[in-house]
Length: 252
Image 1 (cartoon, rainbow, N blue to C red):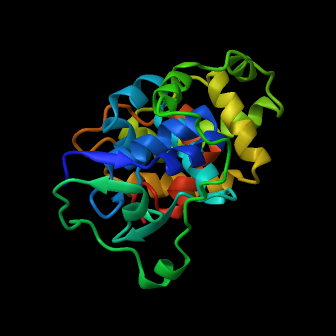
Image 2: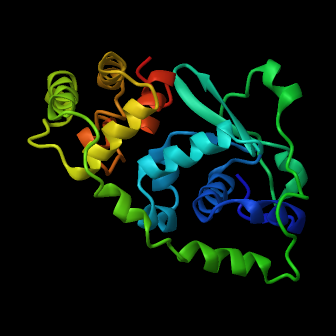
């Protein structure tokens, strides 16, 4: 992999319309990608490879941003699976990022059918930077964090307590023996269960996601290098359920 990467000013301008979290994750994806724009799409891997991102965002936060990219109007990369492992390839990478001493990718190539439809960067998105200090300005923006967000975590539960206990019971039965059982249901777990139900996930979907998680060495902390243990709070989040069901964490 090349030791230095330079992103064009046009591409930086296209990122100005993204949220602060989206900018941070996209910078991390660019930084960890190889010289053909490929990388591992697992949110824990992305977090571990970027200390600054790890200091401000959890793996669940990163997974939520990844979903916003894959479902949004502007898709800076596409995701694909090979052998049950999720990879990504950045759109038009060699056009917006110059590298010194590039080397061939050691990661599997995306399926041929994805190549004709790979999304392209859209330089007209957002406001273009006025000068070369735009990159520095983007970094300073990432440091600012919106204050109101934590208040949402304290919202009152929306469903009967038996509903939350059923999620906890499924987690303890299926994943508990592998990652540790949940003794109680935290406010964040209540909130994530509400969000998952609102997203259309049932307790049956949650059970199936947990069963997939059991088969994933990474999700069950059996793979070296994983720092954050999987728990009820993380597992019941809609982005995690979707990631498990789609095979993003392996175990399929």
